[in-house]
Amino acid sequence: MDAYDEGSNARHGPDAPRRPAPPAQRGAAPADSAEPDVRPGPEPEPVASDVPPGPPEPDVRPGPEPEPVASLAPPAPPEPIASLAPLEPVASLAPPEPYPPGEPRTGIAALSPRYQVGVALALAVVAIGVCVHIGMTFLHVAPANTVTREHGEAVDDWIYPEFEQNWKLFAPNPLQQNISIQVRAGVRGPDGMTLTTGWYDLSAEDGRAIDGNLLPSHTQQNELRRAWDFFVATHDSENRPVGLRGALSESYLRRITVLRLDRDDAVRAATGSSGVIERVQVRSRTSNVPPPEWSREKVSTTPSYRELPWWRVPQDEARGGVR
Image (cartoon, rainbow, N blue to C red):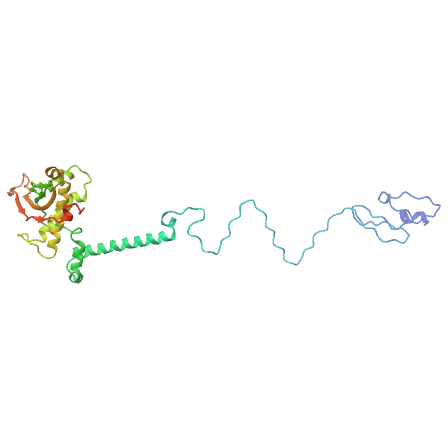
């Protein structure tokens, strides 16, 4: 076969006409160059010529980016993503304050340390006093025991006369008498003459103050009545004191009557508001409570009186020193 039968790759003489190159080789290098590189790529690379090639020029055409090579090193921790939410406060190792800085303190905590100590001491004193009073009251109403035999006098001094306990409400035979306390006074006037007043029914005055009052005071209900019960319990039928508490009961009853007379408008009107009480005398009027109409019981309703001797009034009490 001749040179024309070797196909598209046969060499042609210089005078032979060139055949048209196939479409894939159009626009390639001249016929004297080497065969074109047909490796796959975005564009065909130029075919090397017979001239010794120089240093290759860098290919600056954009191409597919190289895939990242897997690394054997451990992956770095991801960076925190900024959040628009407010950051939470970090817990502190210091002991927490009793109150937050922005919250106002109230009660005892609002006081200065010096006043807090004072309040604590006052509360401790009150608590001790309450405990002592409850203990004394318990020993007073409890049956006889070793403590009351040894310290009975101290317990009585604490209880009488203000805190005396009376359990007659629960007695098998409750009181069925009406007892009223009456008093009269010897008053010295500006002219030096002594005037004796009439009898004043102090119990009736208390009854009028209690009648219709939804919240009567403890003084109106029990002060005068308990003072008389205290006197009767510490004196015999001849009005002679029994034991050391007899004199105490006389002083207690006398002071109550002097205070009542000093505040009584009738006494001030009788003495011209300028008299001085020198002595007082107390008596009781006792009458039985009449039985109901349906009862067959017969009792006497005639009152009986117990009249005490005159008591001298000290100057401090007569001048209003006792309140």
